[in-house]
Image 1 (cartoon, one colour):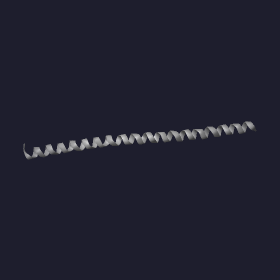
Image 2 (cartoon, rainbow, N blue to C red):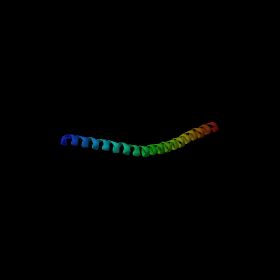
Image 3 (cartoon, helix red, strand yellow):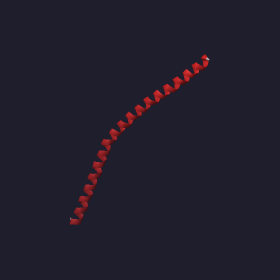
Image 4 (cartoon, helix red, strand yellow):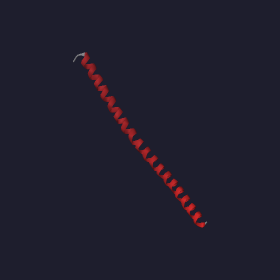
Length: 69
């Protein structure tokens, strides 16, 4: 094996190691991101339920007020 072949082999090995590290890091952060997305989804669902309750309640109150007139 000459010097050029050794340099190419070392570069290939370093490239593979860099790709493997990036892949492992992405998987590690992926789980964290999924948890954050689930948390945000739950918060948005709670806000939507609150807004629906407010809108529905106001309509019912308005309906009662009109009926009382």
